[in-house]
Amino acid sequence: MSQQQMLAARSPLAVVFLMHIAIEVPLAIQGLMSPTSLPFLQLNNTTLVLLKLYAALAAGTCAAALLCFSLPEFLPGKRAFAMGLCFYHVTCSTILYNAPRFIPHTFGAFAESIRATPEVVWGTVHGLVGLGFAVWWQATIQMAAAARKTQ
Image 1 (cartoon, rainbow, N blue to C red):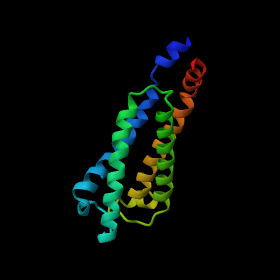
Image 2 (image 1 turned 30 degrees about the horizontal axis):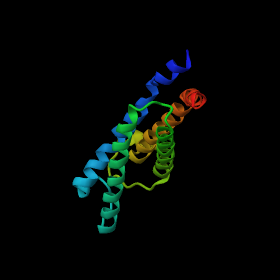
Image 3 (image 1 turned 90 degrees about the horizontal axis):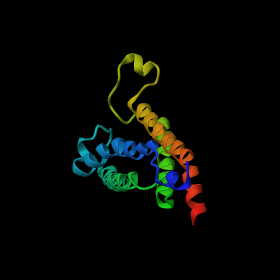
Image 4 (image 1 turned 180 degrees about the vertical axis):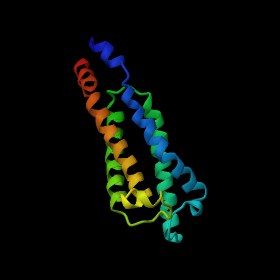
């Protein structure tokens, strides 16, 4: 593949930017519109304000991810944003795995016995998206190197 073809190519792994949107936009919308209807325990005024601030931040990252999705893979801004989202998702995963129960729902007795709680499942999804960003980064590193050579 020539350098020009490599620079023009789009990685199918860029779909990870859309996956970020898919898992963040529901919380962002509901957190901004009606945070008290979220199924979380012990919401008080302080947590509602922080939840709204988080929802605004999540909505902003979703807008940025949508804009970055179609950009060329070698752009430094897209790559930097992807690493930021990678860090965000793996950190969220760790936080959710270690969180006490705060979602008052269950997937049933068997799921509870194998520790498949909503918090752990949500943490797993975040971890998979974080891994997706790391895979995207590694898969497109040659495109970024090729772009640097043409400058």
